Image 1 (cartoon, rainbow, N blue to C red):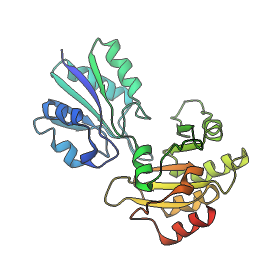
Image 2 (image 1 turned 90 degrees about the horizontal axis):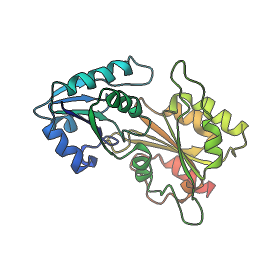
Image 3 (image 1 turned 90 degrees about the vertical axis):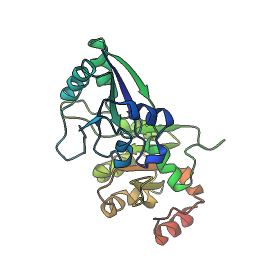
Image 4 (image 1 turned 180 degrees about the horizontal axis):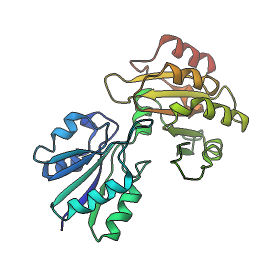
Length: 254
């Protein structure tokens, strides 16, 4: 009986992979990987069979129950099985469903953390998600719910936090902006939309909560997170892809 490693591949750049993750990939016999894992990260698993089981919003995805079964079956045939997930496995990665399946089958497993999109995006902006005496609450949310799941009260969490990071929200930008403003979030709350953080083609768009629908329309098809909160006024470092007009708009808010 083998062991399954739920490994975080980080936000994209291969050199942000942890040393432990790299070492496990080198020993892997088989790797089930997400769609957005960088090819150079996969190259570390030189001796492994590599099977794509990615999920992209709006695209055909591998059923989660099928992935669970493949992991259990693989652990019965291989010594080192890797489930390679973008970002951190335990943040919006459906890791718990895989953990439950492995436990039910009596399969040993280990979670290897990875850099999540929220911290990668804040690094691109040159902004801390927290600030002493100013921003003490950070929340990570997603408004998305799978088919058949109840709606989640994500907006209440955003309203209660000093800083919010919204995962998988670009496609719901109109609804997010409208719901938060309707619930009392000021229209002029500083906001950043960060696409493909840590990749060469990364893009940052700055504005306010009211601007979110337009910013989302200007974004491309890369993985995107939305950051919201007063800490964005303190943007000091100029990200390489930020448009001049966005910087000027942020300075006017400050």
